[in-house]
Length: 48
Image (cartoon, rainbow, N blue to C red; front, top):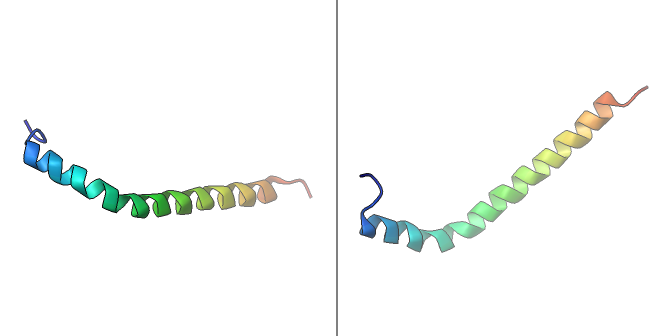
C-alpha cells in the first residue's frame, strides 16, 4: 500500500516543523484575502 513505508512517514514527520511557518503564513494570507473579498462584496452590494 502507498504511504505505509515507515521511513517515508518519518521523513514527512521530520519536515512538518520546518513547514509550519510557511503554512501559517499561507493561512494568514488566505484569511486576509477572504476578509478583503467580503469587504469588497459588502461594498458592491450596499444600496446606493
